[in-house]
Image 1 (cartoon, rainbow, N blue to C red):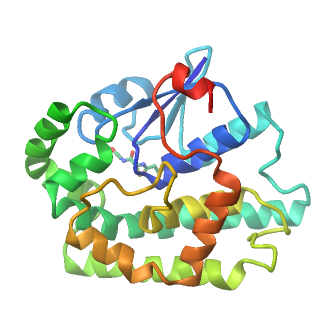
Image 2: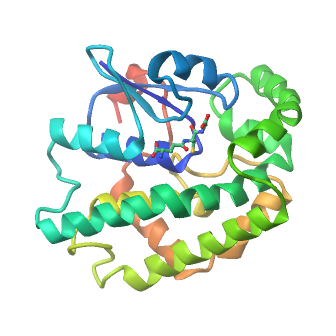
Image 3: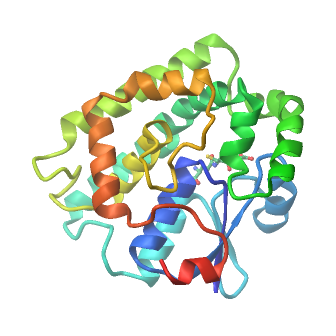
Length: 260
Ligand SMILES: N[C@@H](CCC(=O)N[C@@H](CS)C(=O)NCC(=O)O)C(=O)O
């Protein structure tokens, strides 16, 4: 069975989880904690980013766009890539814009807010782990915070302000672009919707979803959530989740996955 190595509250990981769930791909998930994840992943891919898929033959694939392409080739139904060539190019353009530009910038504002309350950071990323492990992790977070900030390009107030501008651009783009049917490309649900919604979900935290916030989130993260809660694209995200996400929480291991 294939395995997904993941972070829980992460747009790139959510994108891959969503595709796997949507296509009902049998798989196992292993949640890693930011920090200790590095040693595990370096051995597999030579890099440290999640998500990583370990295929049946042991091959490891990283990069959410590459993983989605791999999934689509093996489990074509329901199709997430638009059939029409022009739509497919447009969906991939939107994916690349989010993956390479908007999402990393937005993540700076999100992580900065979460790091202000180590217990919130530990609760979000350690969700599902024993309380004692979360507590130990929360104690380690202040020590690891400078590394997390550096690794994500959080260099000060200007980088956080830039993250907020990227979030505004992403929310505005979705609100303007979603057609009457609510989809971003070609009048059907697919790659562009999953990509955009997984990023907005980091701030919208759709209820009953794997991206729902784990309380207590702390005042800084709550302020970020509140800032965009009434935006039309927050509504779009909640509606898309209600209609197409089909998983109300994350899971570890095949036994929980089997009955979803
Ligand atoms: N372009 C990559 C980005 C992945 C990425 O930045 N993942 C983050 C989580 S949101 C990560 O694992 N960071 C930890 C690290 O880089 O060590 C993708 O699409 O998968």
